[in-house]
Length: 187
Picture 1 (cartoon, helix red, strand yellow):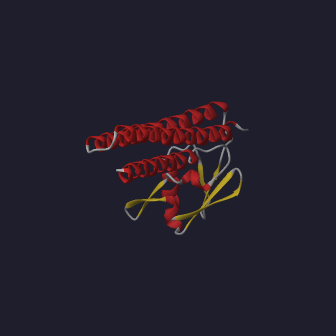
Picture 2 (tube, helix red, strand yellow):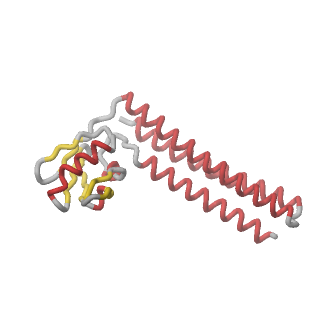
Picture 3 (tube, one colour):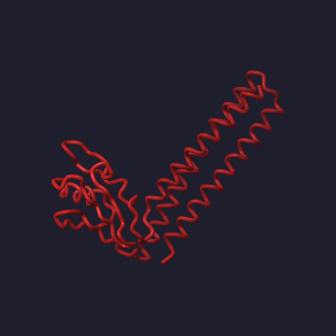
């Protein structure tokens, strides 16, 4: 029975890790005032009749902290890249010079910074919801193990271990979002 409890805890940790990684990747997409190539990860471009990520049709670089440069592998899709950036609704204004698309990243206003912080907190709440869901699944598994013969003491210990894992990952989520908030609010 100990092995089954260990499997439940391992599965819980795996689910919590996946949730944390998702949160970190989503929060990383929020721009903090400086140009980063991953700001354009959500941009989809029409390419030969299908939507593909921008990174599959162009090279994105940052020549300086305020500029993104997108050099397509085929010049014929420059307008599609511009259109994709506009449709992504990132608040960026692409400029096409015939060879590449250049984006000057404007400095964030105080209002936009507060909006981004609110977005980061919403992502944190989604992460915590996934943790609660994972905890419920793990607790249900422990209850099922108790029905199948796991002693009550081991069941209570397993529930305490589950809560410790959830508390640890809740703190990790709070720390990740707090670090992003500091990054966003720093001028």
